[in-house]
Image (cartoon, rainbow, N blue to C red; front, side, top):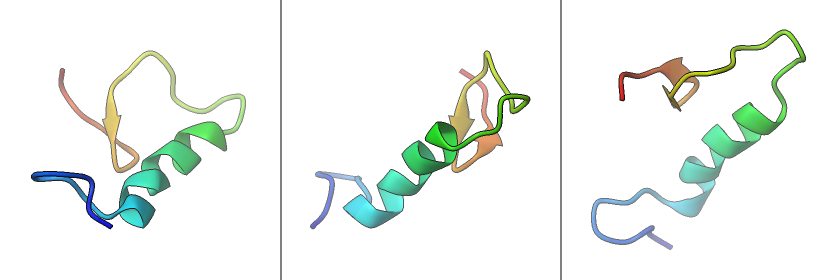
Length: 41
């Protein structure tokens, strides 16, 4: 299933959420990330 116009499949889109939810305590904070990489606002 697609995530709408220009969206990604659910499995692919969920990877970033899982990445963020499973970061270690000393992981990155206070930024914007896309696919686990820092991205500008």
